[in-house]
Image (tube, rainbow, N blue to C red; front, side, top):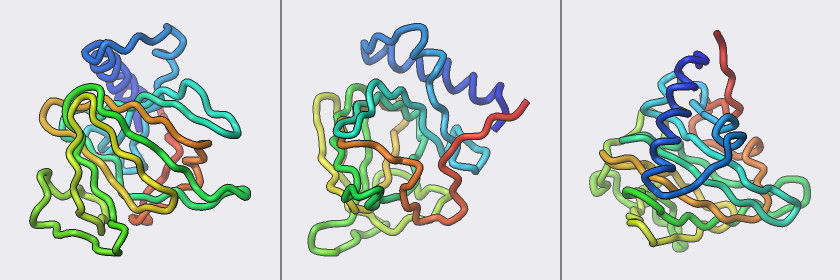
Amino acid sequence: MKKADAQKQRESAIEYYNKANIVLTEKEKKNIEVADFGFNMVEKVGLQLVVYVNTERVCAKEMVLTPNQVCPEHRHVPTNGMEGKEETFRCRYGKVYLYTDSNDGKKGNKENISVPLPPTDVTVFNETVLHPGEQFTIMPGTLHWFASGNEGAVISEFSTRSTDETDWFTDKRIVRAPVEED
């Protein structure tokens, strides 16, 4: 991803944090991570995030999805003796369209989802729509992907230790660690 594109996404993310009344320090603003997952189309497939804390036991993040942006399907796998991340998403602004597999193994029906299919491989379509103030907990190992609608979304994440660099993505083309080039 070009540095200029990443900077544009950071500036957009700051606007969304402001809309959600989330106050960031100047250092946090400069350190907003922009993930394009290796697709080089961050406005469609990507995520902007700030990590407040990530210890051996807990993690807290603020994430932004710009309008119609998708975070690709993945699961949090066991890593370094941990069973995988348990995370709770709480919508702060906009709408979050969250897709998961279900406890009974059913994948849902892609014809019934509210957002366009992303340009990445996805296999689960059980839809939960989160409005501001609503939240959903994703248990370790659960396949999930999420998207925003036309107005974008801000999501707070509260979880066990985050080891996102070891996440298992359905689409094998995905590169989790962002790389910025001139």
